[in-house]
Length: 346
Image 1 (cartoon, rainbow, N blue to C red):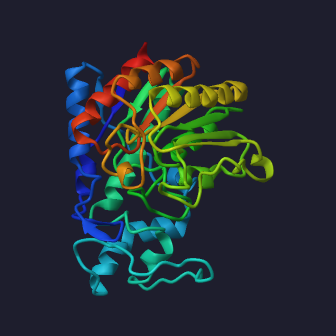
Image 2: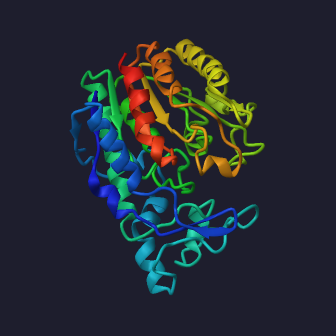
């Protein structure tokens, strides 16, 4: 299995985030990639290759131009305007009726951000662009005939909408890759399966009115878990996309058996759709004791289930791009990633 990775993610290293009302050290750190890479090397999964640069156009195919300009320029503008140089974190949010765009650098973060868990530092945009290039390089490898590629993306992406960042996510790597696959393979369709414990609200928003992408998400119910406002089972798509969005929200404390039953339901829907490609948004915060998921009530999956998850997904026999999303139980993260990838290879 080819692994795509880059050290550019090191430029994104915010010191803190606001979580449940407290300013705390951020959980989404560069150490996550180092731990995963070390585990991949121990397990001889590779080779690990660098991404190539795809330019801005594949990113613009998914994200709003104004939003991209914001991500690229906001840190410097924020500091000049008197914002704290440690990180850009909005102090006000444009919610409900407060939706008029605002360009002032102290106000813009509240327009383009939906929470306080996506702090921006000087290197965030470069890291996000590199993560998108990692996913695009993986997609390009599928188009060239590879059956399974792992894109070690950081920062993650599935919470990023067309013009919103949040939940550690700035550019939606999985969505960018899926769009690239569709545009570069005539008549192709793509399924995106999101197995992060949190709903992929950004991915859902991007493809909600599309029928060439089936989005399926297995996640903790928004009744009790972030991102709260999307991810319910009755969200089935709209317009041309009606019926092409499937959410499978689960109760807190779900274990291996219940999770695999939900996974098989998701895989049946994907098999019925019969896509040419599969993009797997692979989050590992489903692991028992994950410190981020545990704030709202998480799942209780064991390390032993990740190879099984991989084997179930591999049974679809689809060219598959695995895109790294969440997972914050650092001591187990590398082994969990390896387990999933080994299951997919089997």
